[in-house]
Image (cartoon, rainbow, N blue to C red):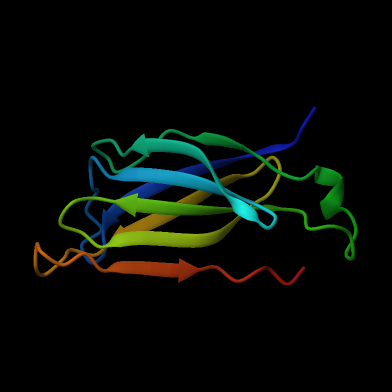
Amino acid sequence: MPSTGTIITRTFTSRGQLPLENVTISILRHSGNALPQLINVQISDRSGNTLPVTVPTPDLVNSQSPNGPTPYALFDIWAELPGYQLLVIQNIQVFPGISSIQNLPLVPLPDAGSRPSLEVNIPPQDL
């Protein structure tokens, strides 16, 4: 049986931490040197949450020895809502059998005509 992990997202305003509804959340999987693969697209609920998404991960045995293969899978998350900066979280590490909760603080745009984005890159864990 293949190993899996879970990604759950929570969207909110960056400063007030008020939940944001109707945020489009896209989850993409890294696949080596190929283009990322779209895994899931959801819309956040009234509480700013999405349903859990089960994603493929390396086998649990990869985490049993210090110099073994990478024990996690890498994913990117894009969060979009009109009136807010596009938020891109890169290199989210998902381990087998673990639920990963990713907070997504969205920053309001000062001007409706601009569309800058905010990118966050999570460095690899020192395992």
